Image (cartoon, rainbow, N blue to C red; front, side, top):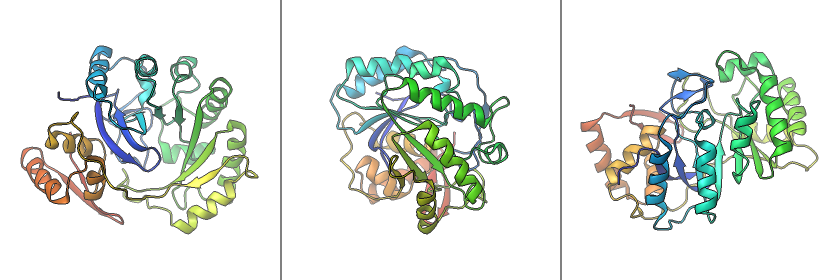
Length: 316
């Protein structure tokens, strides 16, 4: 079966072996973040809608999960903001009722949590991972470049309300851009907001793949450690830097019988190194290089050399 709404499983730095669900068209988002690994937002919106027929997504999930693959999480993510889809609540309910053995996670920018319908849709997820990188309107706008009408105070208020209503875990991501949101004033503001939101943990992240804007650079391990310490709240809320660790990939599962299609879907959604692809698929580097050459001939591939190696990306 050709999957249009599922991708991976990928090796996630935060979630382990994760099957992705993509409910929105490429780069449909409420933000146009300077660090986004998926490139510039081409459709910036705050309007929720059903972008793809719900039955298509559920049929793909039934087919893929019929062989009981080993997964750490099934994750709503992809190349846009998943809470823009009005189908997300129905898909989460389907998974929890039909496949309760799997944990469900939602990666979100948190921009729509002021809406009660969005908060209600996520209540049955096991884990929600929103992002908050500044509580200063000026810095928030510079990093996130939100759609008109979105303000950081509104985002924080929505996250605080969601914490009151939600019984699952919240892991709050703070994305660090050196020189932009690393001052003492910035960190003190974030720390105060974290106390109010009361997530189960805070994850300090920085650039790992090529970002949208070339001027964005990753924070050093020493910088991340300094920021982790500055955001710590007396041990009540764990604060941890997100590291990158390579682990052995599992063999390609029978849900994906077409290795070329699997690799294409991976690099269509986010830039990947050879090691990233190997971890996600279990394919050897030699097999991957052969597949990349095939994709290069048929679709074209962009390459970017970063600190962690050469990243491959297949644009739409």
